[in-house]
Length: 262
Image (cartoon, rainbow, N blue to C red; front, side, top):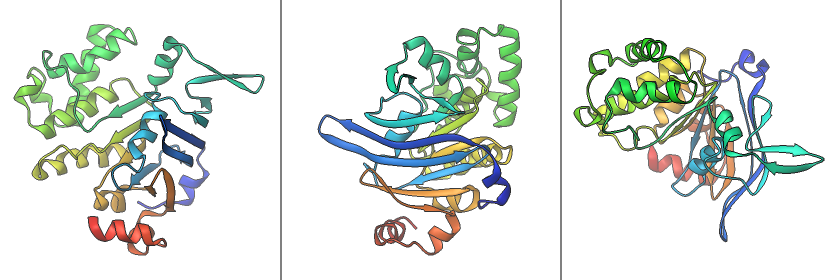
């Protein structure tokens, strides 16, 4: 699935402009520019410490940026701009923005004392104030989608890692987000469980969900990605069509990285 003319004509859902992020003196993101269009699967690759996960956390307002702008659906993320100056949003405003963005982490972050079904309905009932009945109906639809209806009343400890991650995806989808962020969703899984999670992500991509995926699964990037971005040292080194970059990287640093992971 490479970038098509149809994809390029779709409006930008995410715009990242000149984003910088520091942790103390450590300059993690050094002027990142990126555009993700509606329905696009944007894959980020790069070595550990290159800033990929930090960038995702900035999009989802789990981290604050030190310079630049991030827009999701034409709305400035995390700030209000008045008179050319940025003003921090309050927690309630940030929470409202975050409802439109689903995020799946390396670790599944499920509530261990709640069943699969209870995990999925938690946010819709507590944040969106959906009725429990409506939330349960939707949760069962999502469990059907990820192939886990038969595990609805199980607890996370009774599931494999791959099943827990599929529940985490269903939980994120329960909020009906416009954008899904995946932060190395298969890195904590045993190799034989990776495929079941990637298959759910492929189905999600085929349905038209806009996705930003941090991963080392190069085959997934080649098959499913619309754009591939290689990051290193907090900068974008190379970005473009996944199959072109994987087959013929233009930068030595990209070549070195791909030679190690392929």
